[in-house]
Structures are given as C-alpha cells and as structure tokens.
Image 1 (cartoon, rainbow, N blue to C red):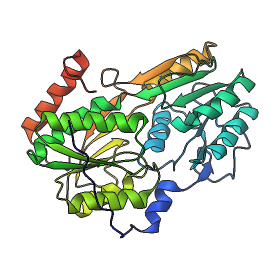
Image 2: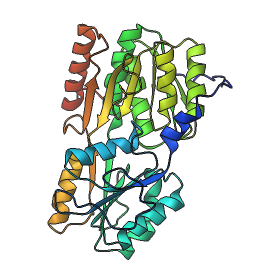
Image 3: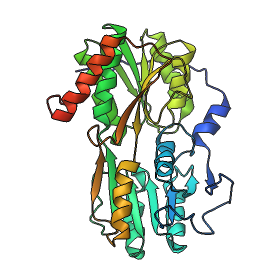
Length: 335
C-alpha cells in the first residue's frame, strides 16, 4: 500500500516558543486563569453536572486537547482543566484530585491514562469518568470510553491530497504508532493511493516533541514531497514547515487554519460533543459508565472543515463528497 522512506533528520529546530505552545503545562478554570491545581472543585456545566478535564497538552494546542475543550464549549460546558499532563503520574494525581473534590464527571483525555483509571475509578463509584481515545471501558461500570474513526476523514483527505499533487509523494509526520494517530494515517494513505499518489510515513515516537516533528517535516520537504500532513499536538512543527514551503497541509483533530491560514486545505475536526451529549444524558439518568462511543462521518462526530482561503478545484471537492457518501454507505473501506 505504501512505502516508508528512511528520512534524514536535520539539526535546525523551531523556536522554543513553539515548544512552549504545544507542550506547556497549566491548570486553568473556565476563565483561563491559573489556579495552580485542581483544588476548588469544577465549574458547573449547563447540564447541572460539574465537569473537569485532564489532558496531556495545552488547551489551545490546535490539536487533541483543544478538540475536547472546544467540544465541551459547544455544549455550554465550562470545565475545570488541568492540561499539559503528558506525564501519566501527574495526570493520575489530577484525576484523583478532581474525584476527591466531588466532581461529577472527570474527562481523562488521553489513551495513556487507561491504567491509572483502572486503579482510580473503583475508588469513586459515584463519579463518572470519561476516557479516550479508547474502544472499550476496561469493564469499569463508571467509565465511558470514546474513540474517533479517524481513518474515515483521513481517507477523504488523502484522496483530496492525492488529487491535488497528481501522483506525487505526500509526507506524513506521525507521533506514536497507536490510537487515532495510526488510524488517521492509515486512512490517509489509502485515500492517497486511491488517487494514484504515494505517501512517505515517519513516526517520531512522540506526541509532544515539536522539534522532532519540525525536523521530520523538513526532511520530507528535502526529499521532494508535494504536500504534508500530521497529527497530535506536535504537529505544530510540521504545519509551520508546510506553510514556510507553501505546501498544502491537511490537519486533523482540530482546525489547523490558525497555524497555516493560506495552505491548510481541509481539517478533520473531532466533535466530541456528539457523544458527550449522550454520555451526560446517561449520567443524569444514573448510568455512570459501561459503554463505548465512536465518532464517525455518519454521526457527524467527524467533520471536514474546508479552508475557504485555499482554492480547491471543484472536481476534487466533488470527488471528496462522493467518498464521504461512499464511506457512510459502507461502499468504501477506510482500513
């Protein structure tokens, strides 16, 4: 399906301000002011539930964590947030702290937090924990799981990219080869192949290393790719390389137009609110967990947001729309 090319990594690193943007750690209330920790409880949600979020990267990372914060905002929920907790032990302490404070719902927004939840959730049977990305709740009655079918939007964007570059190579900057990252990349590669283009895929081994994503993207450019994509909070490095080299960029998780206003073509945006609304309703009715939910193109949990500033050929857009319909109908396989 695709060949992974061995790419050289260059020494030039992006400014340390990018590292701070993507990897910074803070704890904020709904107004965005630092409170130094999880003390003080959570802001009341519009549903009447108090909600807290523990996440591995900054709340404004234009990627994974922001997708959750934005989704809660669309539901009128202003959560208490402890972000930047990529270190699992720090995240576990924050998750436990919110539960001890009596928070109704604690969102553990990170695949790597599953082991911690297995230890913490049984200690707080009256607290509902929402965890992802994950395809199952590990048998915990007070844990909901959520996962995006990221390969679906990935396929459509790969198809668009392949049609744009006309058979040329597309560079892919991946983080860790797991979860929604690998699903997105595999779907993207299939879509590009369907359009007659190839993909060069490199996993850096880190969700948060902006510098490594930057040098990997630059290596792709030096090897002659005609477009770029990437995923995770480290993708800020790759998208800036795409913009600097005036290459089409394809984003996922959140809308990446703020990073590359002129060269972002389309972004697959995670609308967790589609499944969060169902979870909150269940919680208010007394069901605190025990189910898993998925974002798809069909339930509009996955939304393709096109950049109006990028002039996309009408035939390419039409082919993308046909692909979306084919995926929803089951006529097109994305994995």
